Image (cartoon, rainbow, N blue to C red):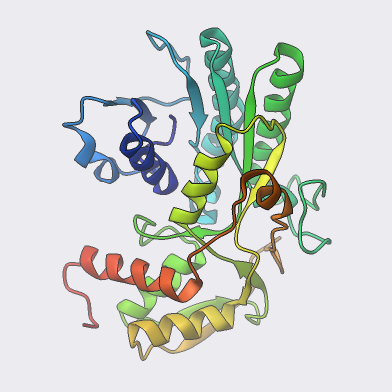
Length: 311
């Protein structure tokens, strides 16, 4: 499993181990944190390899699955690491597909709702081709994930590789880095430190937020289901950025002011998943509502911060 020390990857690693699987985790730790998986170091069913999956892969022994979750995933990360992002989603995907083929293993790709770009169709079904600017600042992530899906499907059609693809919509929860740059981590960290809460644009743009345990449930549910094309995993309930900011302020007890900054280039105005396929195929839908998920996430942030301003 690549990206095993990342936010989502570490939660999936934990789930797979708890289900009794042997996990060979791989990460180069440029955005992942070894601390996320350090508690597995004594587990005989877990092994960690510090390696950049964009480089040649050589794994000894049999594999049942190759699960590719490695990639910078926040705007701050992929704008700071554009070449690395392009490489991990192109060369890294190619390398992991080749590994799966050589081991006669099944293959699981973590893609993203960013393949839809700034969508013109709401909600977004898997059949929607998207509205992406290939040369804009977000293109390094959007287009490399679109390529990752394309080469995964090519391996499925050409080499009969048994593949799974998920498109992940906004996910949050414990282990989301303070400086991750995504809206939930931004708002919580700003609220807990008494800094102004920054909203980009007018705050009317919407996102749908899924708690990480719901996403992991969807991933595990898809693995045994023979469906090779992309599946959306997200929460179909929309919230504006203003609504999210007010809820974070309420749950933290923060007196932070809300400030407004210009909207970043190509930032989607609305992001809403159509999860009809996931419901039909997997009998899956998210269970954790935003308030409950934020409460758990805020509690984790408080614990991680050595001296939180707000008790």
